[in-house]
Structure formats: structure tokens, C-alpha cells
Image 1: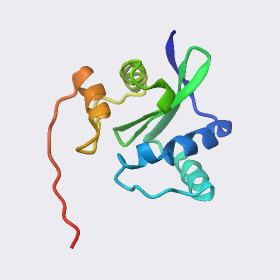
Image 2: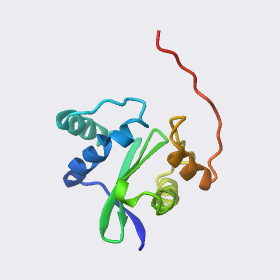
Image 3: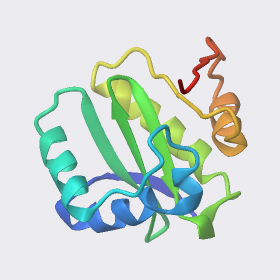
Image 4: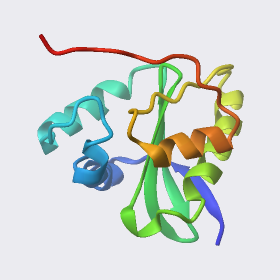
Length: 139
């Protein structure tokens, strides 16, 4: 089946929220707490006017299977658990790069949590280079 991207619509916001609040995804986010529907909607409404924010729904055939976005050159990818290990993330990232070029974006960054092997694999497969390690400590 074909992987494609389509622009995100307001009707997709609940789907995105369900992905965002999925426990498996949250453990790979910097901010790991669940977010409310109100917070999520306010965030997306605010981002609509941000000239550095772009987002799409990932489609696999006729199915909506994930979400991909660019915020200030930072790429985030979330794919429904049922569609993992099907190369959808890697194909989505390749399509996203074409979209980014058409938007005048010349550099993309994948910030990946250290333990997130799936995302590391997607970015490495698409020739992204590791540029930095980030250390932090709660005090």
C-alpha cells in the first residue's frame, strides 16, 4: 500500500490527541504527562498562526495511521501501534522532506529520546547524522 501525507484538518485533532496521549509515545516525549483535550486544542489553534509550524496526517492506503509535523525545523512522527514495523515512518519522513523543500525549509532536525530505538532507526535510515548528546539532571 502507498504511504502519503495530507494536510491536517480540525477533524483530525482527536486522532492526534489519541496518538499523543498513548503511553508508548509519551515515554518517548520530553514532556511525558497526558494532556487534556482543551490543552491540545488550544495548542493547535495557537500553532495555526505560527509560520514555522506545519503538520500532516500520515495515510497508509485509505487509512489514517499517524501524524507528522515540523516545528522550528524539529520533526515529530507518531504512528499508530497497529502500523509499526511497516516502514511507514521512514517513507513518511522522505515525503516530509519533499514538502519541507517546497516550503523553503533547508534543514530538518530529529530530536529523539535516548531509549527511542524506533525513531533513531527512522532518522538513521534517512541519512540524518547524530550531532549532539544532551545531558540533564533533576536537582
